[in-house]
Length: 201
Image (cartoon, rainbow, N blue to C red; front, top):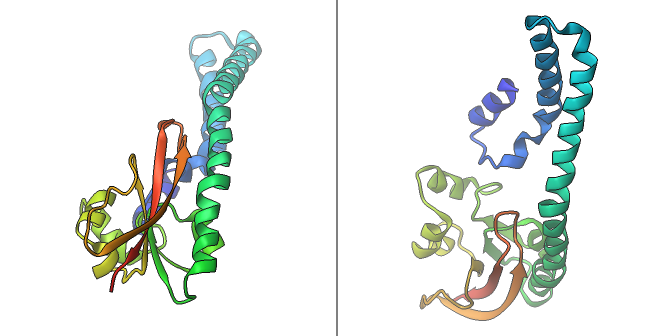
């Protein structure tokens, strides 16, 4: 588990929580090992099986509770958002822009895939030229305000994420259209708007 974290540090990856999912099986194994270890310390080895069953029940209950109350509704809204927001934007970029076009966007997945265009990732996952600014403390909004989409990425289009539509009042940007996305994540079950701008040359 420590080795994975060291690997991420050495490769200077821009870490999000899901990158640690790979070590969850190890955490579970260690949890059960520690439970058995405790039963030996408190001299209750003969009840170890009961403790394991109870511990397993608690884990299963909390998993089902979190899944049904938070995860499942988020998955459903995210799937709908993909179909109504990200995929249409990607298809529009594919059908309406030149193949040489570059797109600056904070959420690259579906738009990058469907657009078949060069992506400048505002999250820094696939764009090292942006990652260095993020590591120096700049936020996504800082990148936009400082026009990094133009100066660093040489982008032809910007797909901007915001709580309102057409909020970028920059002379270099021409708003084209927007798509709403409800429930972007577990901690954000509000409507987010993705506005597509053309960068004026």
